[in-house]
Amino acid sequence: MIILNINFENLLSLSHIFIPVLTSVLGYFFGRWHQLFLERRSLDNKRFQSLYLPFQKLYFKKINGAYFYLDMPNQLQSTFLEMLIDNYELADSELQRLIMEFKWVLNASDSTKQEINDKFYEICLVLDNTYRKLAKKLYYPVMKI
Image 1: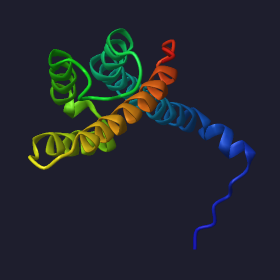
Image 2: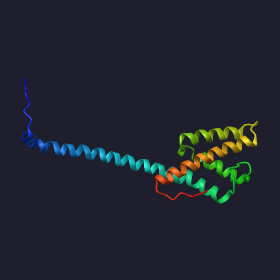
Image 3: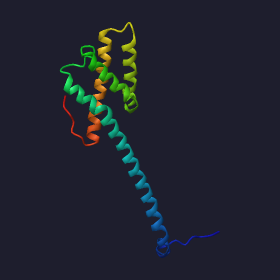
Image 4: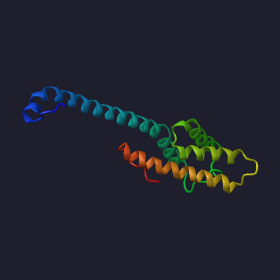
């Protein structure tokens, strides 16, 4: 049976091995965490700049009042729809679900005006909430609507 005689002097003599190894391992994990942080931030910035910010700006400039999709001019309706569909892959899962439901309601022959406007309202609420979260996370000023 081997008995390890571990004392302070033995640890000091082995510290020239343990300290560089420990420093390397901690440095690797910190570097990996930082790289993942930068990638997430870059993706969030892309989502913010491509979908959420343009939607908010367009809504802020062109619409006065409630989120009524069918009360907007046809050109504006198509602009909003294109923006949502073209950036579908950048939306979060809840927004993706709502965009698909909105397309289905919009294309259904038996949809009422109220159903279409309600679905667009839900999309606008999710977009607004996510816009605010991303703006705070990315340190952008939040536009108040």
